[in-house]
Amino acid sequence: MSGRQNNKLPNNLPQLQNLIKRDPQSYVDEFLQQYRHYQSNLQIFKLQPDKPNKELAELVTFLSQIAHCYTQQLSMFPKELSELLMSYHTVIEPDLRMTLYTHIVTDIKNINAKHKNNKVNTVLQNFMYTMLRDSNPIAAKISLDVMVELYKRNIWNDAKTVNVITTACFSKVTKVCISMLFYLLDRYNKEGPSARDLMVRYSTGKKTSKNKKKLDKAMKVLKKHKKKKKAEVFNFSAIHLIHDSQDFSEKLLKQLESSKERFEVKIMMMELISRLVGIHELFLFNFYPFVQRFLQPHQREVTKILLCAAQASHQLVPPEIIEPVIMTIANNFVTDRNSGEVMTVGINAIKEVVGRCPLAITEDLLQDLAQYKTHKDKNVMMSARALIQLFRNLNPHMLHKKDRGKPTEASTDAKVKDYGELEAKDYIPGAEVLELEEEKKEGEEDEGQLLFQDLYTTLVTLRNIEKLHKKPKADKETRLATAMAGRTDRKDFVKKHSKLNPHASTSNKEKKKHKNFMMMRHSQNVRTKGKRSFREKQIALREALLKKRKQYK
Image (cartoon, rainbow, N blue to C red; front, side):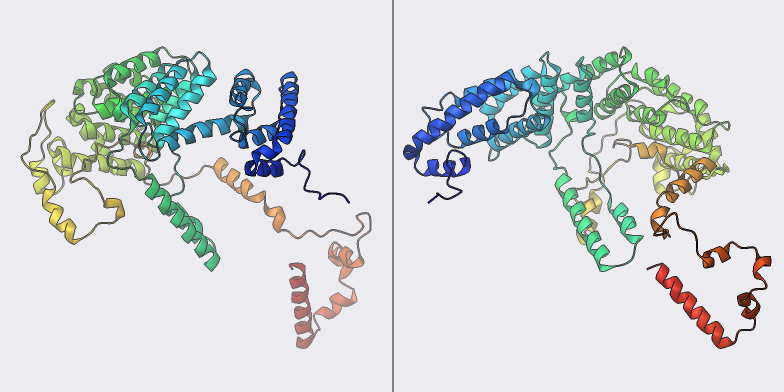
């Protein structure tokens, strides 16, 4: 009588693994047999390392699971695996590389799960810092990715880690440098659809219960993602943790001026420098003439360059440094020879710059820009009015009397501080509204808000520069391309009339449709059509409708 099919220990490794874990001493011979099998497969793999070996992978998994049962026989097994990876790392599959990367991050996360293990972290961090300076670009890139991932998970989020990994910005390897720029500019966090996008998406179709459930589910996921993404009070950006930001930005600017990288990389460097200057209020006077060279309407990614100019402006920069930048934007963008969109972008950029450095604009230039409040293009008109409204709050005396609006208590008390002037207060601005806020609770978005928030202390976004109040009309080529794109799928909605035999002739009924009317006017059907009774017409209409209904089923 033959044994059971599943009781084949030499081939059934999961069953043998289960039995060994229960009674290791009874299955020593079977274990040694599999261990010899593993050693022979290992020699075969070393002869052909690029060839897949599924059997070796199964044996390695089997031995890893039972290694604690035979510690003496498998004492060198971990060392063999590590040497194997070190010797043949060039032929490792991408999936295995990703698995190793994930395991490294997960292991360090588990070590610091309950509390931060500073002793282990110090050893691992020193090793990662060494790998970051390694001559092998792949090793440096992976070590940087590991440290960035651990920073995003709030495991290695101290200032020492940030200041060490920022040295990767000066790496000669482009991939490492770009990864560091992505990290400091927070480009890894891609924005998903907003609540408004979801509402628009699900409001276009039928109001069915299925669509309503889909919308509710999507809104729950979005709310959960926002709650998870919400930064804690003590969670600072990596840019805030840089120790010597002045020296770092100067070195980065020097590298940018002599860089031969792609234009996209240069733009990212300019964005990082502008953020450093704006956040830390640095003095980097050579940066403004460098940006000024690219302020032309035909320049590629000019809106991002305008964004850099706005972000690098702050109250401690001397007005005579920023004034040439504003004049360049006004002369190159805000002229009648340009289109309405170009003029709008220019006025928006000037508005963002002077909002952070009000002393940089002259009274004559401001009054000239205010004249565009009656421009025929609505976008230009609204941008000019926004600039007027800004100076009604900042310094209404720089505007024409007719543009100052109705005087209010805030506008009469408005005074632009001189360069370097500080305004010390013996009270907390906005504290008087605390009692009102207790009575009227704000929504979730307003929770944790500071007592006062200056509009121009936050980072400028690209939306502030590119803001258009009226959607521009599409030209003929764009409309034609949209129409042609919509016609590509129309074949799916057209009923296909196919013959059983493609070589067969058409029927007499089909031929009648294409005959000349003079040939058909004397036929019986045509002559008697006008003499039909009401009942005959009713029956003919009913049959025609039934026939049409069958065609579209």
